Length: 51
Image (tube, rainbow, N blue to C red):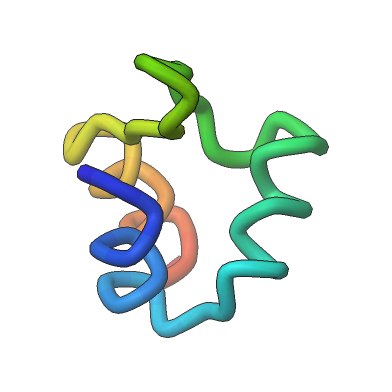
């Protein structure tokens, strides 16, 4: 997933996503200068958020 998709899924701003990425809250990979995120990692975060 790209940053836009993640922001929509988590209902956060791109700036918040950047902070989460910098603090290691949301793991990502940089491919060709673009940050990409695994859906499985986001699912884990959403499950933790519900608790």
